[in-house]
Amino acid sequence: MLSIDEVTTYIRACLKDNPAPADIAAHFGYSRFYLSRWFHFQTGISMRDYIAALKIEQGIEPLIEGKSIIESQLEAGHASAGTYSQRFHYHTGQTPRDYRNQAADASRTLNEQITDTASRAIPHYSFEPEKHRQAHPLNITVSGAAQHSAVFAGLFPEPIPRGVPIVGKALFHTRSFSICNVPDGTYYLLGCEIKPSLNPLHHFRLDHCLRGIHPEPISFPLPAPLTITLNLRPFQPSDPPITVNLPKLLFDFIKAQRNP
Image (cartoon, rainbow, N blue to C red; front, side, top):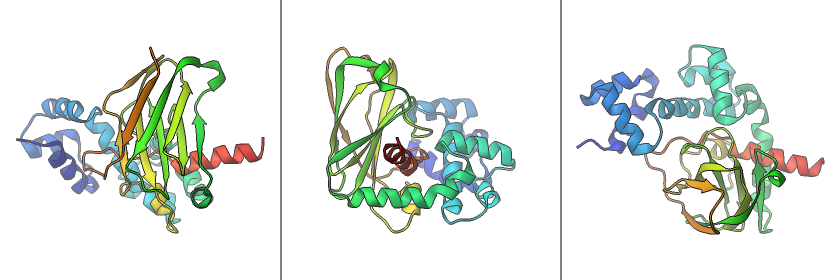
């Protein structure tokens, strides 16, 4: 019987061949329509979105190493520079050029924050929180992360960590936080751990990190206070890549605090 890990492992193995959903379905002896529907049912995202995220993940490493944009584009399997830049921005929140140029500062800021032993949860909002006050909070405890590491957790509109979260928290020396002000809607709670490292790539290419997703979407406004444990666990082949630029979100918020 076909397993999702079998399919996603195959996709990762042949990614440089730029596989289309029809090619993948043919390899396993299924129709494109059947396998696409099955893949979405198993993962909550489309096969095309999964492949697109993998390609962006492939393009991150050359940028962190200071290589050219065209090298990143080719590594990601894109023929068009314009299309690649648009899709890269959609996934990470930055153009490939800005991502490369700002990576060192963002990585250094993240290491500085991890070595600061103060307990804190640094927020990021994609909206004005004072305009969305709600009666009931969402209380979250993260389980499974190492003591001396950062944990990023946030609400996303899809079960795939790309773009920027609706609201997110960077946790340092704490594993509990609350979210009180969220626009009405349905979101997915996602999280990952990032450990201190002298290699900036470990802060941006996150396929080695512990991660977690709450199994059910969460709808706001909440009818009552809600308490959730988000369990982090090792990477699995079926996990979509984490392409959102988490160090950059932290860097921007801290920069804004220092320069109000």
